Image 1 (tube, rainbow, N blue to C red):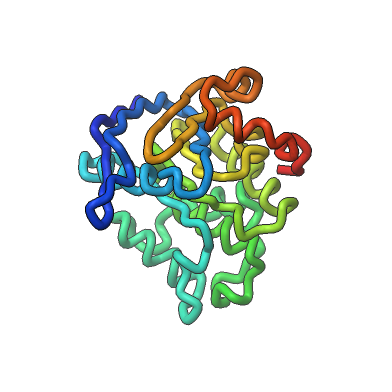
Image 2 (cartoon, rainbow, N blue to C red):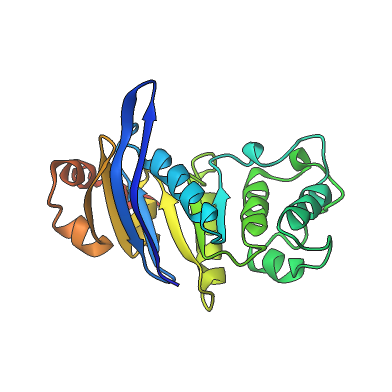
Amino acid sequence: MNLSVSGLSATRSGRTILHPTSLDIAQCEYIALVGASGSGKSTLGHVLIDNLRSRGLRVAHVPQCPEEALDPLRSMRFHWHETERALGFDPGSTDKKTLFTALKIQDGDLQKRPWAWSRGMQQRFVIAMALISAPDLIVLDEPTSALDPIIAAATMDLLGQYRKGHDTAMILITHDLGLAARHASTLIVMHNGRIVEKASTVEVLKHPQTDAAKSLVAHRIWAAMPC
């Protein structure tokens, strides 16, 4: 299913932080939304999620830190069952085994609370919760910024492997151009609340057209990062 939105915008304290924006997302497309801090990446992600959900589309969100999604006083099993209920499934009825195996958290003890799991396993658990309903789109907002580079790379690789054979499109919001270059087929560059460039990842990296894209690509350290 191709997804299209138009006229997305946002203001804060009377100031426009996202100018009217249109976006087309192809089925199974993997987009990286990049730009400097304050460019509007996360704002676009949140507004996009709200718009698509209001139209009845299945859109999942993975926040920057697992702490945003997990209550330290509740067991992992509680979180899983609550997510199932919220999505309209009977607790225990979803294919947890396949998701956990794909993301390599099948050995995690669901009786334990989040702090008893490693940070990488926590984030993979949050990703698994996001995939329960086989969403049309999953939006990951800086999902690896709190992880070390090796675990971050492994997590994104596992998610990419799971997506093979599924129809889920993905938007990765990140300031890490190395991560975007490795995983995304399309790059969207934002600057001052606007999309200033959209093209294939290879095209943007080799022939950036705008000052914002040229500035990102000019910092060549991204090319050597393990992500």
